[in-house]
Image (cartoon, rainbow over all chains, first blue to last red; front, top):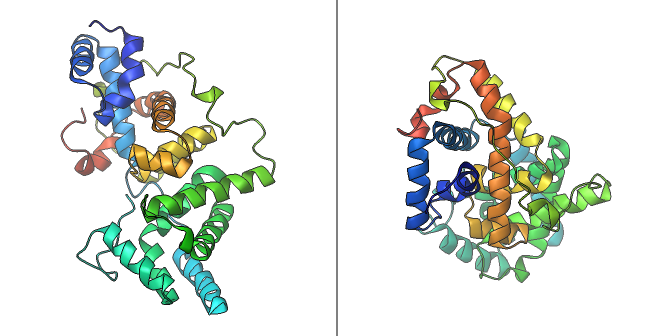
Length: 80
Length: 225
């Protein structure tokens, strides 16, 4: 199986997920070994995903939890 | 940031699913105050789910509160075929989408999973060599703003799947249930969302010629450059 760049881009997400069969994985890796552009696309995509998974990127509004549980408390009290 | 149970809540030492089942049974039998403990591990995920759709802190918080109240009211309808967290997030997604529709903001974006998921030849940003980006320093605030702005620029259906899978670390199956679509749709949207993020961010990060990723290397393992 020989893949071109567009084939590899179409598989990048599943490849990162580990959700490609062994034959396709091997074909993707053969392409990546010889195509620095696709290797860079894979590296940059994977790195961006690591960045956005970082707890420090997204923060809750100050006092969110307190306000949520106060409202919940009111609802529970009203229903009992 | 995955939705996991706190080890200090009732039922510590058991799996999150077992803990949730026990709490739900007790709540339904009258210990309603335990609902606080049931939702506490997931309240952050609820907010990010509503924020991913509404893109406004105040609206997202209001929708998150409404989500939790609806979950309390409808807890008797919860069926253990899915995780409680998945059920809760699906309520959050529906609540946020309903608010968007009500505000008539949802004019130009489809939420039915049809046309935007078709493969129309979207291409990533082809950069010469990502690994050439030198390791220097950049303020974390600047990085955070870059990432938030990039996510905010995605169409809603891509933003929400990216938030659930890549920020909240839901499985593909859980994201599918929460969003009310099939797993194939989630995978297709995820591919598009990830490549859009790469296309937006890779040139910016490269042009910064900075060491953004040095800030996060401890989380990233050995596969950075």
